[in-house]
Image (cartoon, rainbow, N blue to C red; front, side):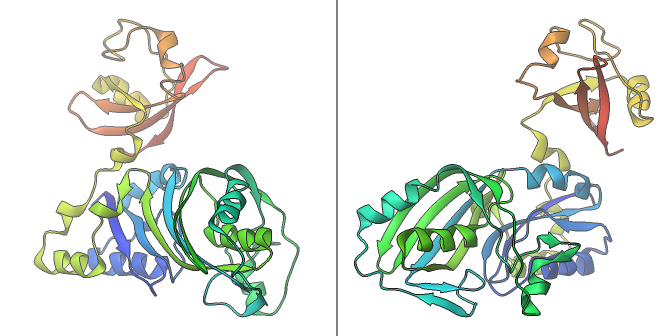
Length: 309
């Protein structure tokens, strides 16, 4: 089975444990998730099976939507509620206006320092392993894109925010940094991933629902096709002969009106416009998804980037 499951990860389960469960239930060895959720967090966890693991990188790049509860007045070493308290302050004087103003400084392209309790590598070792050994190291800041950051509710000392962000954003770090900006400290009390790319929590399945689907033999109906994560790229249809060329790693020049290579394309220059984002999906005449082509401007050719058949 090749495809993607949209699983609603429950609180207390690691992303790795969900992958292990899917491996065990499906018998498929090639299983991976698209973006770790910490154990206390819940929500959308896309799990890819078989050839679906080949498109994980496209899912990782996708925009994410989170709803987070941030508790002001207490900072921890893990930046969430599970950690050891490192700072306490009095948030009673913080108004909604002050909170809104502070949130404003975290919109757009910001710099984040990854938490010590994270999977970021330091000289080949994950930071969280160093943290558990009592070793603290200096971490370099890295860019994070916050597309939207909205205060949904303010019940002092807890602020509920909704975050739309790019890849690599640490919501725990956002909570911690907000507390530092307000001068009282803060930690991430709870986190729900509402969306990952096109996968929405409203369409996700619980672990119990998935187990039931495996037990009764209809789990395949819950699997999304691989190319669903690539629908923002335009599609071409090629002949069987061209399909074989692509499978063998051959490069293509897609010419206007050359039906042996492409159907429903107007002009060569339209293929390399921003509309196509320099990539396109490619299918056989029978509708089979072959993979993704990438345009190389140096050669003026389209080359296979990710071939699945």
